[in-house]
Image 1 (tube, rainbow, N blue to C red):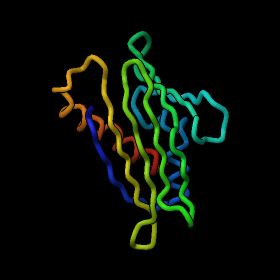
Image 2 (cartoon, rainbow, N blue to C red):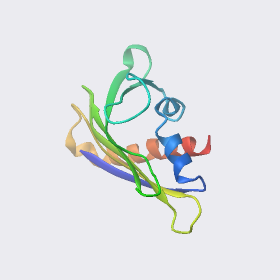
Image 3 (cartoon, rainbow, N blue to C red):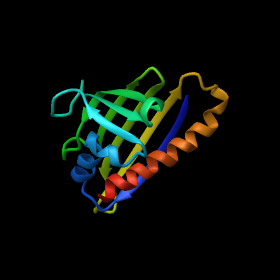
Image 4 (cartoon, rainbow, N blue to C red):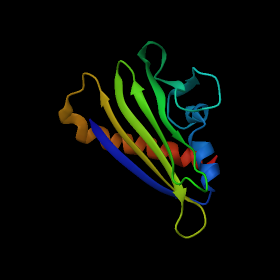
Length: 147
């Protein structure tokens, strides 16, 4: 599986960074050719299921994910931590979001970790998948944190 990590700093508070990163429908505008639908009623928590549909027409695939850890950042529980398990026929693996206060005393630090595997793609290509994932999700984080 291809493993990658993205570290970012933002001037946003931990609560606001968390809100933006875990508002699943907002991810639709941050990942090219992808639409997110949430299959379970709000609020988000353990058991929330959402589906990322990526592609155009018949060339699209679905990437269903389930939230398996949900710990929003709170003063008595830092960092905030969310883990999603990818349960698709094509894409499997997991993704994690971590949000904590920046040591400078202002803003927040966040970490996006992901391990993904594309079924049918040889493992020898994992060294190419990881930087591609870092690029795509790095762009997504930039969009989510700015909007």
